[in-house]
Length: 590
Ligand SMILES: Nc1ncnc2c1ncn2[C@@H]1O[C@H](COP(=O)(O)OP(=O)(O)OP(=O)(O)O)[C@@H](O)[C@H]1O
Image: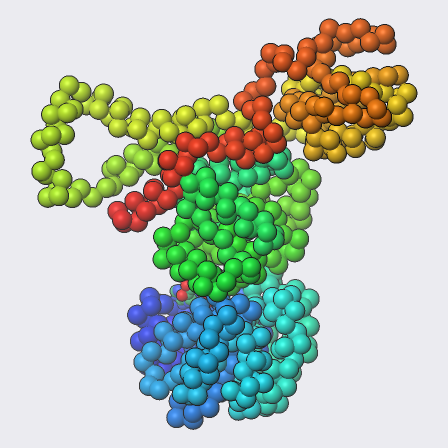
């Protein structure tokens, strides 16, 4: 194996990276650094997420900069401020032993005057987001004519964000002589186009197979009903008490909603997306990086390229449409040779996306059972036991209280004592989970059987039928409009003259009855009730009405919201605040 010394790096840099614990170069570093040190060719480096691409371009770049020449010699463009800050911080750390080498970071949402001042003091390397840099160019606060090295990081994302024109304008103020380097974990068509449009005969280095995911990531997926998505998320989080991860959503709105629900339910979570102010984003990122925030709910853009140590999980609340997005998302875990788990929450309809990802990324995706309540309780309990085992006892501080404690507990033997201590933790979870649904979807055959038979379904009577102009699509449409229940949850429909029957997954029965309550259709007041028996055409039936004593598993009788969100998130949890408490405690113990 090669060493950093053999790659031609200077002592100043070798010492700095050795302090960071970089012992041997990663494959992309090993291959890229000698070529880039030569400094003469355009370059495309493709390597999986978390394999040290920043140092692969950063180290040779810093070697090539001449500190005594006080003009900007290198420009690094980054799609987001967070990534820009991260790159600039890395470069500052790598170059801390090089005298008078200035890395200046400019981005939107912060004082432009302050950035102008910093640029005036002299910048050798500028790390910038495109919008702000363009602004600075227009104000003539920066001169890029002597830039010799241009680095495009996460370039496809910059194009996705609509920065193409800005980038073109920026590049037109740089010299033709510069060399351009591009690093990426994926090679979507945009990256290809960029290398064609902005580079001349680039040297291309690919480590591993292009577009494959980091092999240290374990890919899992849970199959669920769409309406259970949030409850499954909470269950996964509860099943991994020490989880430290990012939950990816598709839109800013969904990101904010999921984060708010999690916070309301007592989890240590926060949102990161483009609708937040920079101050908010900074606070969230800082808290997440220093591990006082356990769960970051983020959009693809906001978390692109983010390097946070030791993330245990990435959760795809919804799968992204693009394969590359999946790769970048899941690559937030398993960085620098560590392991991590990527979990996708998918409905049966989305399962083909998983198959497609698996085929195209050449990675196995394992379908994992959603833990049932008892399993979550067991996990939490064992985690609590582990913490008991590991906790550092503050002998001196606790000593004054020991006599009083012993007195209070003197009637309890060891076994009793253990049970009671454990119950303090266990009861909260048990209370919450004892009646929790099994959120696993039945297999396709079971689902089919369920549709055909009466198992898990109710047969509903409704007093409208063919004579009211009702056909199957109209009835399904009506149920959806009136109650929010989709046609796929409705089984067999029997249309009669002035009434009809339809089978429905009994989890939706209340919703439907409630949805039709008080409804008037075609001038007729709608009557809907659970039918006990198959009726005769005369309409005679042994029906049970709305108040009937059907068993409905642990479904509540509230509205959809109660069912989807609140039910699995009883107020008890708030007091419990388990996520934060466990996490904080763990950190203190570590
Ligand atoms: N040679 C090395 N030895 C040990 N750790 C390293 C080495 N090189 C980089 N790292 C660490 O690996 C982590 C990932 O590096 P980096 O952020 O550059 O990955 P990346 O390839 O750019 O990932 P992404 O494609 O997701 O942006 C960082 O925390 C970095 O400090």
